Image (cartoon, rainbow, N blue to C red; front, side):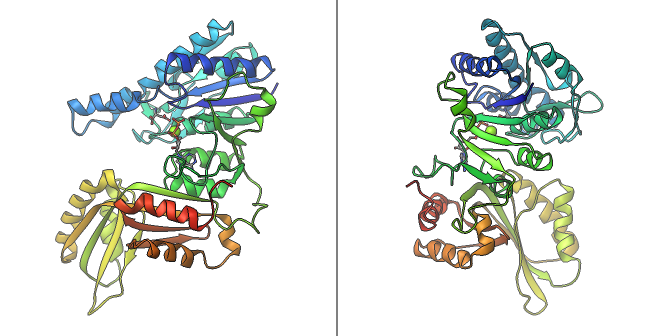
Length: 416
Ligand code: ADP
Ligand code: ASP
Ligand code: MG
């Protein structure tokens, strides 16, 4: 019997009425003969609320305790959904991550899944039960509860689908698929029927939070067919319609390569930039600047080193905005002590806007069109980075939405 994994996000689980609707949808799939594992998120706002409580007590909470707290939202969700399914006459059982178990490493607040034991779940499924597993959480080798990073239920779902060799993983959310850009920023953004795995990976890594990047990595590594679709439609809509709705992540080389130059526009509001002036231009400098940043567990994204003048150069890089203060501290200490460079300045009000598309491989002039569009809007580009299928620019955060709208129009991405 084919197994399908369903994942429901926070909005989809946002009230007991919504949970009852989720139960109706899941029961419909089960009635149609599928085995179903459901992976829900916490009810919307809940994870923020409980992390907020921790921060009221400690400005810099111990990450182990933070995960103990943050993981609880999902535990409420699975229990409520099991009750809702039982109320519909279904056999349903819920599990926390540690009960499965979903084993992770011990990097609290951003743990990585190492293995998933399928024994208990497979036995329940064979027994006709619908199995509901908490998203977002796991357990390390010592039995500590861990979480997978914000938005991590997507990753739980795809990883569980891969471990159980599911036929498909359906990610139900509050939009009906992956759009050319966030439909909350551009109202005439267009829904994509398919998006290639590579494009989805870029879009997720560049800030499109519709899927957590690690879920896309799992989908790619295990070639798990994954579809993003809406949980806000009629839960009893015909299955045949639902099965082909939303956006499928495809593993085919894009058949539209000749037509589509750009597939989508991603943005990340929460960037910060740091510059060290007057760095000696000699071997090992980049390592001396970025080594301590990496040791502090801060991810560096864009990097620029200027042409040197009189043996000195300027070095600029970006980090997530949440890590800005820590990065500044680390930089002040290490650079001033060991490198003897001049001033350090920073700007925590920058955003990154990226155009993404496999069509870029076969089209020239995308960068110049992007830069002309930004120039026409009077938007200054502070940094640029490119890969084979994306171009990203760093700009002042106050122009971010303007840039996204202008680029969406310039690349003719809007709905017909
Ligand atoms: P969930 O709680 O279901 O996991 P999220 O809020 O994490 O939902 O992700 C869905 C949201 O992602 C949408 O409401 C939308 O605002 C946002 N989003 C960002 N980029 C895109 C995109 N390209 N296509 C669709 N949604 C996007
Ligand atoms: N509840 C977690 C969060 O808010 C995980 C998720 O929703 O995917 O980040
Ligand atoms: Mg999400």
